[in-house]
Length: 253
Ligand SMILES: Nc1ncnc2c1ncn2[C@@H]1O[C@H](COP(=O)(O)OP(=O)(O)O)[C@@H](O)[C@H]1O
Ligand SMILES: [Mg+2]
Image (cartoon, rainbow, N blue to C red; front, side, top):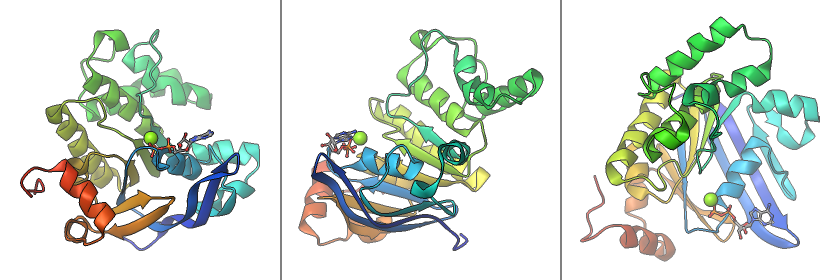
């Protein structure tokens, strides 16, 4: 892993109507790293991803992504910047009236300057990469939740992003399909050398692929550590979270 910084969160604060959701978020996420954010619901995990992607502007502090101070960018520069980032939304967010292949093609069509043959070739390649090579012509209503997530995944990587953001990539999936998605995150990160930030409350999955795990509580990263170190933590809030997810003290490793 190189030591190049891809995301710098410097005391980032995010308040809505005077209520501080994030209150001094600090992290340095490196190139090629898989950085996982865990924590109870409603603590600001999705808000953190929106800050990183430039969908939200911090109330205070700095968010630097791929060398750009996101808040200093003009609208045009911000949309160019956002093309360097792939985002897998929690719901999958596919359009129901388009096939999986047409959904995956959307970012390339929006780009406006890619020849149709090239679009078809790139869509076919990423569908293959996520194991949907034979399913491109199906509509979202015709496929399983796991296939919807994988199609969302294909759409997130079709522009060959430098940074991938995942919001609860396994929520709503059964354990077997969850592990399929986990392995996909690990293999795509390795194959493409792309930096990944994954928000999840699925600790078993995170332990399989994370380089580092940050525990978000009360607007801050209470602890940021390797999976091995996190499992040994004595911080009571994190212990309670870990112990609630596993029976009999076995941690899925
Ligand atoms: N655009 C918004 N306007 C006002 N409040 C918001 C907005 N987005 C998120 N919040 C609030 O911020 C808190 C954290 O939300 P979120 O990041 O979605 O939590 P989670 O950790 O479950 O992903 C919640 O209380 C939510 O209601
Ligand atoms: Mg969320």
